[in-house]
Image (cartoon, rainbow over all chains, first blue to last red; front, side, top):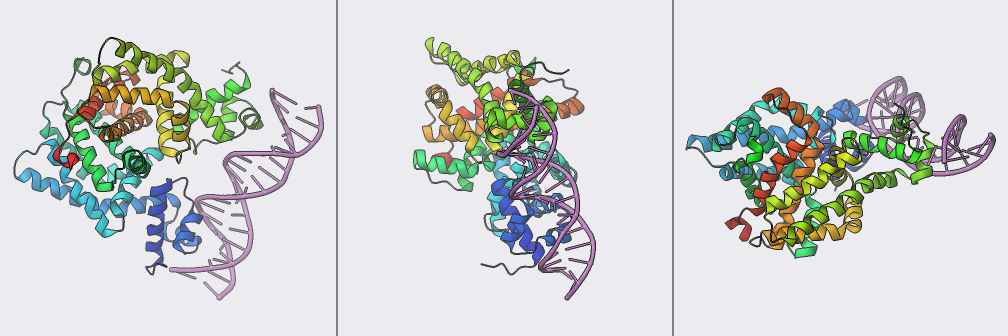
Length: 215
Length: 215
DNA sequence: GTCTATAGCCGGATAGAC
DNA sequence: GTCTATCCGGCTATAGAC
């Protein structure tokens, strides 16, 4: 099944699969280039370093996802003030559309995002916030408007809880789907997992502050 | 500040700090032994391998936490059927008590748990479920009873969402506390973060099933 | 039990021919 | 742009003296 694309694309395609499955530091350039059937030295020729390859892999998805997500949000806010469930659900379409740009694109993107946030000591976090900051700010703004009873400082925490929920679930989604199949005879794919997690997150983000929070 | 404990303890103490901060695969035995001020070879003498050192580090916490948590649950169920918020809150005391057995014990334990679940391809997950399975089963059982409107298969997912929320939050808690301080002038410690996350998780676990979930 | 020394491997990166 | 060959550093693990 030799891929007939150019070398750069072959590297990106092989790298994203391996990174998503095994994590960044557990994936060597040797493994990537052997799967991609290209020369080891070509990674450094095309990307300069492993770190920049990692960023390029993520950017290829973020450049598609972020504008699409922003557009969905714009559609939503044009017609009124959406609730949280609606906002989160609006992100599902752009997410699932990633399956069209690449095989298993949705799963791979979300797993990469998970790995990226957890593994790297902030350098990917920095990359994402500086390159896609406007999109993120817009999202936070819409969420805050939809839950005006939550002060911004509290919302900061809750959105990071939400990020954690998504990111961990996606990084372990393969294992979880296997267990669900074995223990409950449940067939799941990435979409059904996303549909399960949305009500969980929406409920948590909007829950009224307890006495302990307000103190 | 040379630690006057025995070599084995010195290694464990240094290892848990570094593992929590940097992750397992990013922490070399060389770094551990130099911080512990012991010889490189002593790790293999006392623990056999890096993998077993990782397990020993985690076991030292789990052996304290798991029985304490089970005992809290028993107290709770003896006097009636507790609600979710009460169940989660009952775990806070055993968690904070870890600060008494070791400096920053709570933070370190939760960060280790986070790293452990995400980084390793299932071998730590296996270690935890086989060694502490009874405690975990007991917890799941109590949670299911407190939310009888949620079927077990759905609860499986929601408890893993919850695990993800905790684990990611704790693995990034240092960064999050810094941002909260810079952006909102908020002083937080590990306890206040735990208190914030509990209502979020309790709301998500108990939220009624939507049409999409039931299909 | 603790040390030094080193084996043996694998990683990222590069030089230089083609 | 692509190849081979190699550098060099870091890693885990172990052998063997003390």
